Image 1: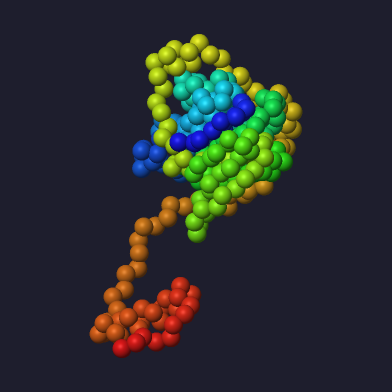
Image 2 (image 1 turned 45 degrees about the vertical axis):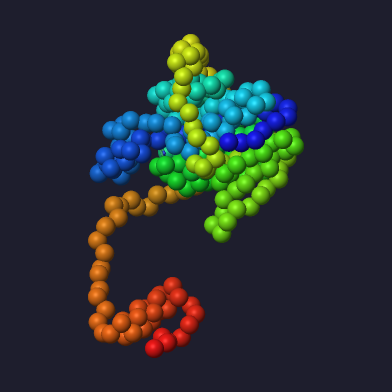
Length: 279
Ligand SMILES: Cc1cc2nc3c(=O)[nH]c(=O)nc-3n(C[C@H](O)[C@H](O)[C@H](O)COP(=O)(O)OP(=O)(O)OC[C@H]3O[C@@H](n4cnc5c(N)ncnc54)[C@H](O)[C@@H]3O)c2cc1C
């Protein structure tokens, strides 16, 4: 639960349609293009983006304000946007264009940043901390850089009572508390809240709503800035990782085996302190 009070906040939630994570084992690579055959598994809203939607709706419930939802995706992503509208979002934007295909994280963030600027003034851009499929966790921070606003990543709770953003953010070695002015980009972790399911009333309202669709020309982006052409990442090879492991059974007494194991860990740089084994 996020404790929030004060003036209204205009939130834009970026949602990515991803193949249903419960069906990941059914995903296959096209043997010729080596791209994922996404059409073989139904798409859903990226799980952490549901936390971002819930955080934005919680802000709206407590303060008023507005929540828009935006995706860069093929036209069939309208389904995920309608679900977001059914959950209570007020507007939906679909950035869609054949030219967007093959976008890496930078081209994705550039396109989303152009959409966010065109959508108008915002106080908060909310993203999932990472996507279930690509999982780079780069799009949120790149968005902040392109929009020239602070970024608060891996947020587990927020307090907006001061009119600023006071956020607890998970880090490798613990938690940091960040205090930021608005506007800003925040990326949400799963523990931030408990996403809800759409209510019947929300579904009825969503079915009467219209999704705003923008292409690269609407966003004022050149072909060289979007999709594969606008992506500095080059994919050199894709291969299925082998699950096979080389097993080795060390021989000797417990002390001898421990000494051998430590020696190997030291050799591989996994243990850097302690010499020998006390017997
Ligand atoms: C060379 C190359 C070609 C690629 N071609 C394709 C392709 O043709 N089709 C394809 O689907 N993918 C393609 N990808 C993958 C694509 O780059 C990533 O899926 C995308 O940039 C997002 O990165 P990510 O999944 O790591 O997001 P992360 O950075 O892990 O996502 C964090 C958060 O950012 C937001 N976000 C991320 N992506 C979007 C989005 N599209 N819309 C709205 N919000 C978003 C969400 O809130 C998400 O939770 C390609 C990648 C490369 C390197």
